[in-house]
Structure formats: C-alpha cells, structure tokens
Image (cartoon, rainbow, N blue to C red; front, side):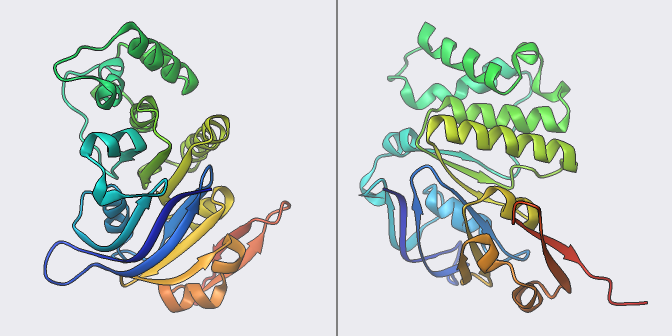
Length: 259
C-alpha cells in the first residue's frame, strides 16, 4: 500500500522553485530518506509534503489529494518535526509532548485522561519517563531530540516527517535515536520520511533513498543502488569509497586525496 505519492512536484518560496519535477512513491510502513548536498532542496521537499510550502503537481496522502484535506485532517495523517524545532520556554517535557495531542481535541477542549495516558506511554517508550517534569531547556541535546520525537509520536499519525532528526548529536546518541525510531516504526507500522546528512546512517536505516541535487531527482532506489562512488563524486564533489558492513549495508568512507 502506498502512503505517499508525489507526481511532478515543484515548490519554492518565490518566483523560482527550489524543488522541480519530483515524482516518487513511499510504501506504507517503510523508511524513506531524502539525501543530497547542502542546498539541494531536501527540507523544502519535506515541508512541501507537510503542506507548509506552496507547490505545483500532485501530493497524495494515503490515496487522498493533500489539497483536499483540511489542516486538521492533515495533522491526523502527518506528524512533522522540523530541523530546528521551537522549544518553548517554561514547558516541561510532558507539557511539550501533550502538544502532539492537539489535532485530536475539539474546539476549546482540554486534554482527557486518554490523552495523558498516551503521552505517558510515549514518554516511557522513549525512556523519557524520569524526565517528564523537567523543563525542556534543561535537557541535553539528545534528550531534547527524543522529546521532539515523542511529540510527533504522541500525535499518532500514520506518516512521520523528520527533518534531520540527528542534528547536533554525536554518533552514539544519533545511533540510539535512530534505533528507537526504527523499533517504534516497526511496532506501530508507521511510515517514516526523513532527511539525513549522514549517508551511512541513511543506508543503514532507510529502505529507499531519494538523492536530490539542485532541486531535482538525481537518483532513487535502494541505498546500494543510489550510493556509488561516482554518484557521490558527481553530486557531492567528494572522493569516497563505498564499503559494505557484514550485513551488506553501504558505508560511505571519505578518501584523502593528498599524501
């Protein structure tokens, strides 16, 4: 089943589109990663899917044209975490994660016991229970990233859009976050669409990659098909070797070009 379908999507912020002619499909329950050099249009494409950027072409969510959905209907289908989320001053982790329940509330309605239970369960699944009453600003970078993920998970949508979810994290914290996300995705059957700078992490966790360069699709397919040394040289200007883990996942290793 297809969770997301794009056909000829072009989008941007002014007269010149940042993303041009993107067509792709994402299977339900899969992990789809958008990769590419800086300025390629990755975040713009993610915001377009989220309905935050005007676009031309087709964006279908669970078979329905995105333009036909109300803001609330979209919020019940899609959870979006930007690259640099606003973390409001004074909010505790629980208060912040409760914001994810907003699309499920009626006009002027307050959170119910059911909403609080969902938040409590979400915090437990991300090992945030002991931090529930801590202020967001007092958390470490890794803890804040988990809180952001908890907010979108509490929204209980079928699709998660995550813009660089490992930004600012060291390799250990980044790996721990991606492992948690992958486990939760499999448990819930959620579809993940993310942007990722780290190509090795993208190859390890994503089922499919879409390589953008200058706003256009340069390649798409399985990580082993997309990540080749020649393609990385052409689109990143990088000299690399593409190695393999014991399980066959690509590992992108930069190659020093000077003696």
